[in-house]
Amino acid sequence: WHSHIAWIVNVDWQPPYKYAPDLIKDKLIRRIDNLYVFWVLLSLLIPGFLGGVLTGSVSGFLGGLIWGGAFRIFMVRQITFCVNSVCHLWGNELFTTSDMSKNNPIIAILTLGEGWHNNHHAFPNSARFGHHWWQLDLGWLFILLLKRLGLAWNVKLPSSDQLQLRSI
Image (tube, rainbow, N blue to C red):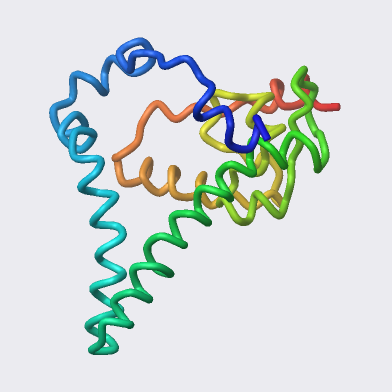
């Protein structure tokens, strides 16, 4: 229970400037953060609007609001929470860590790579979680695309020596 969802309400709040002082200085990031409730409401209303327009009905609006909005958010949150709960219970370990983290291919597919959780705990600063050709990591491919477009830089990866040293 705690690892799945309770950690959200049982955690000591830390000021953002402690972990992300550069983001706090960015006016655009602060503006987006200040409009958080607006973005959540918009993410609920757009699917509702599309459902209403496509069907021409109030029930289409409500269906879009519920299924494309609220249920979508609920499912994404549950899948995200599974990284902390499922990936510390079921899966395999390729690297030595002290936290019982596991790689779970089902969660990895559902989360675009986050399910390679043992890899993440072994190399927490790595932008890539899938360290083997068979570990699908779409999040890494997106970061790689951003890097090639010049929109991401200083991308950190473990060296082959580091990977070998931590391997079980």
